[in-house]
Image (cartoon, rainbow, N blue to C red; front, side, top):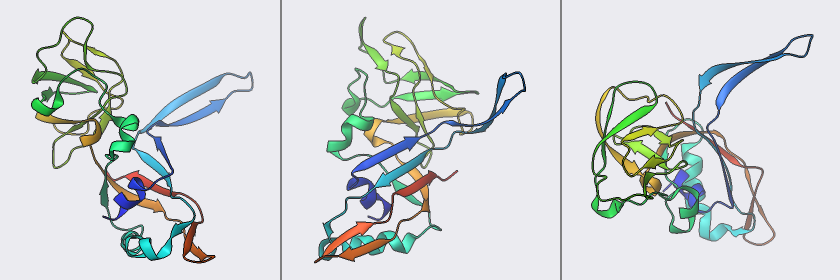
Length: 206
């Protein structure tokens, strides 16, 4: 446990995956926007102030040892965090291996593992998290509901993996490879308590 300690004990988790955009404003007030690409995940995570130093110093040391130079894997997978990225569709994921094919762009085609649904049910809902199992692959969010009889998944950014066939990880089973680009300092205060100078900021390692 290292950066995962920060996620598991967070009091707040900010998630950004927006495009990098350049905007210009003409003299007449016309605004023009140009996408600069990007769309990597960025997490801003705050730890609670006042936790016991004696209970946490070993784990804090493991986090500090990674510093801002070493990649690590994080997942938002505590049961109490299921409201953040839990699966929203109607499939029984415990007994289903969902496979997809990818050719180009930001769409995937479901090839197996999603049978048994009826009208009014969904294979995926907008906001679901999916990951191509590619040791591991990148994480994507679904941007449109996938009806019970549809096999096309549209995601928030172009697929980064090579064209081919993949098995999906879904919901709380996804994980990110990240670097810490901003690491706060800690202060021991009072008796056996720790406070933080700001949030941890993690950026998806590409």
